[in-house]
Image (cartoon, rainbow, N blue to C red):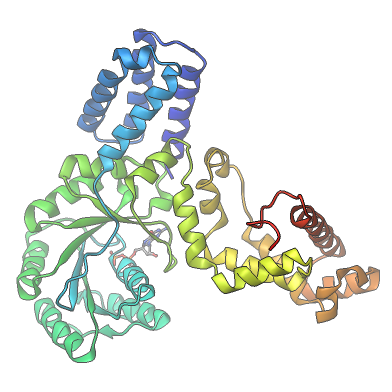
Length: 439
Ligand code: GDP
C-alpha cells in the first residue's frame, strides 16, 4: 500500500532532517518534491495544489523555522494536513435505533460489492448483530450464487427472489428481516461497466422503496482518479453516506484514498485489503497518514491482536512461560492465533520503521505451513520434550511432514533459542516483558 509515495516522502524528509536549521528555500524545495510525489501517486491535481500550499504556508512561519527541530515540525504539519485531507470518517456503521438498519451497497461492476457485502456481514456478526444479506444483482445469476456461497461460509442468511425487480426484492427483504429477527439488512445491488441512467434509475428506485440508513459506495482503489470521478457522480445522483475503498492491498499509489474526501466531500468508511472475509478495516485517516509517513500503525496492530487473541489463552500462555513449560504444542497454538491477524506482510507494515522494509520481505506462507506440518508429525512426548528428538526421530518427522531433516533440525534449534530467550525474560530481574513482574 502506498509504497511509492511513502518512500518518496520519507526520502524528502530524511534530507530535510539532515539540514538542521531550515531556510525558506529548503522548505520550498521539499514541498516541490512532495508535490511531485503526490502527483505520481495519482492524487487529484487540485487537491495536491491546495495541500502543498497549506503545508508551505504553515511551514514557512517563524515558529517552524526557528524551532529546535524544524524538519520534525514540517513532518508534523504534513501529517496533520494529510489527516485533514482524508478526515472525518469513523469507520463505523450507524446502527438505527429502530431495527433493521438498512445498508445499500452500490458501485460499478467488479468493484467488490458482493465481496464487501459479505465482509460487512461478517464484521457486524462479530459485533453481535444478526445480519441478512440481500441479492439484488439480478442480471448476473452468478452474483446471487456468489452471495449465497459467501453467506453459507459465514453462516449468514441470504435473501433472494431470483430475477424479480430489485426494488421488490429489497422491500420484501425488510419484511423478511423483521419476521426473522435480523437487525441489519445489507443489500447487494447490480453494477454496470459504466455509470448510466438505467443503473441510477434502478438504484433510485431501491432507495425510495427501502429508505436505507446508509448508502455506501464500493469503489476499486486501483482505478485511481477514476474512483474519485465515480464517487463524485454517485454522490451527486444518490447522496452517499460513505465509501468503501476496495483492493487497497493492490493499490501501490494511493491517489484515490487521498483524493476522494477532498474532491467529493464523502468520507471513506472502510477499506478492503484482500479477498478473504476478514480483509476489511475501518478507515482511520490518522492511522493511514502515519502509515504513509512511515510512522507505523500501532493502534490497528493492537486492535487486531485483541480481536484475534483469546484472553484466557493468553493468560495460560503467560503462566506457562513463567514456569518455563512452553512446549511445541503451545508454539503451534501461537502460530494459529497469529495467522488470524491476517497476512504477515500486512502486519509488518504497521510496525513503525518496518513499513518501508516490509515490501522487500517476501514472507513465504509456505514456511509457516512447513513449521505446522513438522510439529504435527511429532508425538505428544516429542512436542513436550524436544530434546529426545535425535537423528532417527528427525528422519521420521521429516518424512511425515514432507520436509527435510535439516528443516526439522532448524525448527528445533529455533525453538531452543526461543526457550532460552524466554528464560531470560521470565527470570527474576529479567526484562519484565511478561507484565507486572512475579506475582
Ligand atoms: P462486484 O461485481 O462489485 O460484486 O465485485 P465482486 O465482489 O464480485 O469482486 C470482484 C473481484 O474483486 C473478486 O474477484 C474479488 O475477490 C475481488 N476483490 C474484492 N475486494 C477485494 C479486495 O479488497 N482486495 C482484493 N485483492 N481483491 C478484492
